[in-house]
Each structure stands twice: as C-alpha cells, then as structure tokens.
Image (cartoon, rainbow, N blue to C red; front, side, top):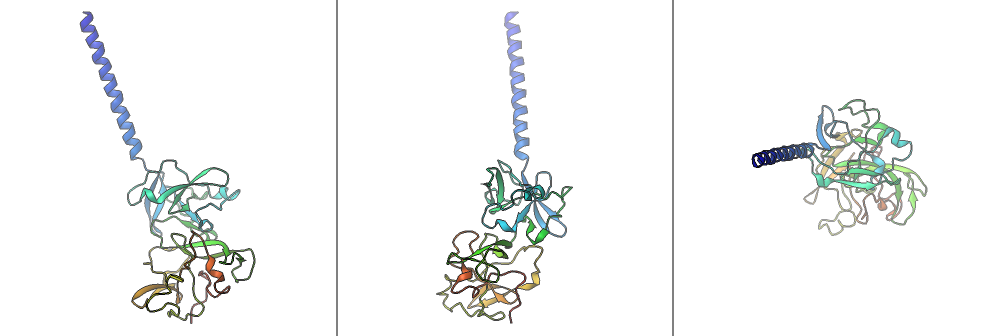
Length: 278
C-alpha cells in the first residue's frame, strides 16, 4: 500500500509540476506577444507610432540633439514615454529605439534619436491632438524624411547667432533630416539653379547636396513647396526653388555650424518662412 500510495503522490506532484510549467510558458508567451510600440494608421496622418494601448507618441522640434528640452512644467502637457525593455510591432525595427537619461536622472525612450512623448490632451486611443502644436510638436512617424528643428544657431566660429544672422541668443526654426542633419541654402543660387557644386563633385564634401527621396514631412509643411533638380546627373532636393545642402563640418547630430561660413548669412538654414527663390 505504501508503495502504491507513494506512486500516486509522485504522479500527482509530476502532474502539478507539468501544469505549473505549462502555465509559466503560456504566461511568458503572453508577455512576449505584448508590444510596447506599434504602428497605427491615421486617416489624415498615415502611419504613426502608438504605445501598447493605442496612445499616440510625439517628437519635439527642440530635441534635435538627442536630448530632451521639455523640462519642468512642459512635462505636465507632454509626459515622457519610457519602456525599459522595448518590444515593437510589425513594420518597426527595435534597433531604431534607444534610451536617454534626462536632466533629472529619469529615463526616456527615443525613436531614431528623437525622444518620445505623450500629449496630455489626447483623451482617447488614436487621438492626435498634439500634432502641429506651437509649430514644434509633431506626431511620431516611421517614415519622415525631413523634420523641423528649433535650436540656437552656433556657427563654426563658436559664436551664437539669431535667425537674422547677427550675434545673439535666440531659438531658430529650420529643417533637418530625420538623422538631425541641418539643411541650408546658398544665397548665390537662383531658382532651381545650383551655382556651387562642380561638375566633378570635387567640392561636394564641403557643402554636400541633399539627396533624399522625399517621404513623409511635418504636417505644417506643404509638399508642393518641395521639388528636385538635376545636378550633373544627381538629384538634389529643393524647397521653394532653393537647392538644399548640408554642411560638411556639421559632424554631430544637431550641429548648425554652416551659418557662419564664410560669413554669417551666406549659407542660411532653411525654414518654411524663407522667401521663394527667384
């Protein structure tokens, strides 16, 4: 009897252990299936980033240097988004996400080096009320080719400049690539005419032409203002007729050193208020 009883007990223990293991494995599968960030489709904005509950995520134009400039009271309206172990849905690449340490020591998740936020006035999943707020807050998308930045201009000479290219402290709005690379125009160019680049591109490293296929752009910009021109067999992006360039010595994300070269204002940054080229 003892032997039979022992066998029954052992069998019961094995069954319980198997059940617990199965439950644990199922729980792990459920956890693994839960994503932190997904893509959703908005009827007017297209593909946008949302959290696991469908709440929209945003970029801030002042964060072009992969740091957050939404501090203090700003966070009451724009709470940070942070997930320790990011898991992404279909159409997203986990390697595009990272984590920064904010000024107060807290953490924040970034996407393509842009810190991510919520908007406090988005009451429901799928709301996108924060897009375009102040001309500096934009819904986070996976396919931006151009972003709007807002930052202090600091020339290659180390001097701070205003949007009028005189010495001073001021925040200036301008275009950057999704990688945070500042875009410029050349005052000696004319409408749809590049007067700088040599036919052999021997000076292209100094002021590289912007060669990107235009995809999504911030909602405050007009797609019709963009175009392209042929430059000795290569395609350069234009804005309001101005050929667009990068500055070769802008080596760090968010740099805008070209504003002082060779003199302030010769190579101005590009923003939506620029006068169309003639």
